[in-house]
Structure formats: C-alpha cells, structure tokens
Image 1 (spheres, helix red, strand yellow):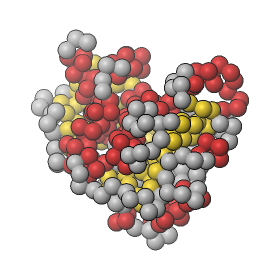
Image 2 (cartoon, rainbow, N blue to C red; image 1 turned 135 degrees about the vertical axis):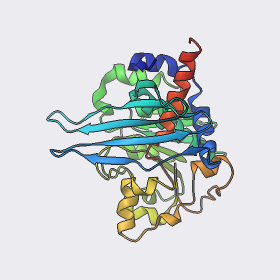
Image 3 (cartoon, rainbow, N blue to C red; image 1 turned 90 degrees about the vertical axis):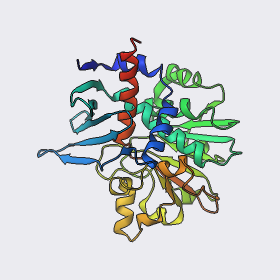
Length: 313
C-alpha cells in the first residue's frame, strides 16, 4: 500500500530521525558507487514558471524516487511546492508519497551542516546566519553544536519589520543568538557565514570581507539564482554538494563558466569529503560551499520516514 504523508505527519516523523547522520551516510554511499545521482531536470512552463525534478537511487536500500517542485509565478509572489515519491526497486511499486516541504528544509540545512563539519576551521567560534525563515532556523539547529560557537549573529532584510514576538521566537532558538540590524554587523568578525535566503541575486561577496572565511550558499528555484557574485568564484576555494551535477545548475557557477571559470577548479564535494578523498581548505583564500539540493537527499529522508512507518512508529 502506498502511504501518503502530509506536512504535519512528515514533521512528526522527521523529529525521530537523525537527519544529519542520514545525509552523511547517503554521501558515503554516493562515494562508494552505491547511490546514483542524475542531474536535475528543469522544465519551463509555456506561460512562465517551471518545475524541477530531483532524482535519486539508493541501491543498498532498494529504493529510487523523484521529488518534483514547481515554481509558479503569481501577482502575490511565486508559489513553490514539493512532493517526493519513493519507489521500490524490488517490486516496482510506489512506497510513499510525501509532502516534501519540511523534508526539503531539513535536508538542505543538514547538508550544509555536513559541509560545516568537514570544512569549517576546527577552532571557529564566530558564526553568522543571513536569513530568518524556516531554512535559516533549520541551519542554526543543525550547526549549533558542530563547533564551540561563542558568537552567533543573525540578520535578514525583513527582520526589523517582523516584530517583538518573532524576535523572541528567534532568540529562543539559542541563548547565544544575537539579532543584528545590518548584514555588515552580522558578518563583521564571523569565521563561518551561512547564506539562507531565497534571493535570486548576490547577497554577499566573500572577497569583500578582507579575510578568509567559510561561506555556505543554498539555492532557490528562480532561474540562475545565486547568493554570491559569479565573478568572485575565481578568487575562492570552491566546494559543492556533488561536482557531477552542481556546476550545471548553480546559477553563479553557470554564469562564471560563461566568463571563463571552470568547474574543474572545484576542490571537492561532500561525497569525497566524508570519505576523505578531497583536500580540506587551508584558508589561504575564502572558501565557498555551494549546494543545489540533490534528489538523493530527498530519497534518503523519504526512506527513513518509510522505515519508521513500517516499524509502526
């Protein structure tokens, strides 16, 4: 029987899963050739908007699947949804159809956490987060214990207008969290900066900071979306979630390649990092980690949810 899970049930089950470890395990499987990650499929609608299909195969678990996520422009802003379908490689039958909104938030943040775990300086104590929505909050949750953070600063463009209740809600996430009125204040002395926005264009130029830090960047569905300037890639040590697919989808990499930058300059991806096959940064230059979101991340969490349901939990 195919199980259909709504967002509320997905969140209940996610709370019972070690999402961070699930991502590490999945990337290790990818490195060993026991998982397959095809490129994203982008399909544009005739009248504007698009949808992206994220595919993935987990051979040892005996499952494959697809997450499909549309970007639908509208007068009040774009609508973005996501659903994940998990299939059995043994029976060919569907196992699970899940509202993927919460899964996407969790796997995006946990993937960044794996990157911070692998790439951030061991002695880093100062963290900055740009963004204040669900994805930013999830990033804080997954990275808050990865280093001995003495300072955690957060800023987002709409923070001032969000009111005292929202500010109190954010501060309750971690007693070390300081809300900043400007991005400049938030990143002033940070050693690790997490960009957690839905921006389609540059939010921060790491080369402008005057020091060598780790900056992580995620993705949104807007065409060629990017949070750092494409021209800055040449001045950084660049890492990504998966080198075989990320350069063809990450907006700043696509644009930088048009200007002569080569994806051959990527120093490593998470699959290589978690099994020790990629060099870690020496911080002679700023370091960028870019993730686009992989179908395998969605499949790993969907499979974990399915296992819980099969166990009657």
